[in-house]
Length: 328
Length: 250
Image 1: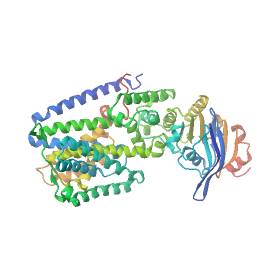
Image 2 (image 1 turned 135 degrees about the vertical axis):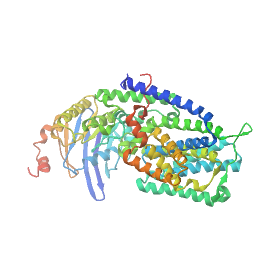
Image 3 (image 1 turned 90 degrees about the vertical axis):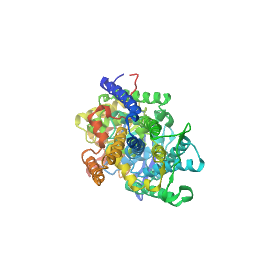
């Protein structure tokens, strides 16, 4: 049975080879980069996961929840602090940071069972500020408003360089995006999208709305927690002011410009908005202008972001919420 | 198959449905008619578990379903469509139909995100089932179209396919003919009749006379939440109470 037709088959093939080629290129990339560009690329990888995780809740589940910077911070703090206080090796600390993000994510999902829209937005923004209050005031544990240094990461007796981190980050990003993509193309992703459009209809189809919401929030928190764990390694420094409102606004801009409900868009948004400030370094003041113009332009001309535009123009970028049976 | 007994639904002093009793058998099209505000949709919502009746009982295959959450009732094989369109506009037609298989896709959370073979098989099987029902309803060509871009008639068929795909035994349709062109209405009527002929119980709310008269086995008329008549469609036009309710005189 091939109702999707031969062209759909060809697109699938193109997508597969395209992704493999992209991955090979990304593996070779560090060979031609200087240290500065390498650092910027590492930052992009971190924000790819931030955007993918955020998009699960805001793009697919359609909930105006703005606790994403909080999940990011929890991941970074849990990772860094478990290295500082318990001397845990980075991989273990990373796992702890990721899980911490998932747990906080699931917990933030609970108010979303009762409130929606702007009310949820306010509550979730408050969660972010509350977390910052903890970072600042629990200084015995968190080192207060100044933050703390994350110990160097050692691999086989040598310190992990930015180039080494790149491969760790790349592996984490590939794993994070692949698993999220699989989840979105299963009954779970379809349930998220059904809840976004019509909760009553979703319930009438047998979708357990509350449970599904908590699952989406927890997965979102987990992925963003992983991003936080990478962030702790990226800078070697974790401090409360990184995870405030401006961070939240930046993350929101990434998913809106990239495209709500688009994985490719999430990645594109992360790359564009991480690169833009670096490219505009020599023109002080321009960063804010370009950033604002970009946001206004996207909201005006492409409400579904760059990802949505690409999906409309090219079948290659059309993301569906099911996996085409390949034996067809 | 479905037995509603003395069901009463009250909202803060307003009695929306009052001591309503009726039974729907497998293989029949049972229509509920009534003027605006008569309590038709409220009765649907109460049967589907969206609101809880204040009094009375609803049995499905002899089993009490009052108090169950909507997703449990859906799991028993009672599916519905919505007035004003319950279609998921941003999803494709195929994705819409697939959401009807939520409970029938044996894919666990961990299985889904790891792409585990057992999960993958269940997902593939669901895609096949969805395409099969779409083929039967002759909408398989629309599968990759965004549902919000389809015509009303097509959307209604997608919604019905979605309600049927998991093997529903009772399907409740809330004003499916609204906004349809006459030719689309005719097609809808055929589809409903075919469904009933396969042994599915069809519970229909509609005003559109030609559709109701053509497909119904039984017609129940509600007014102010009360049943004022129940009879085969041919007799409804002679019923004094019904004429009174609709036309204000008899």
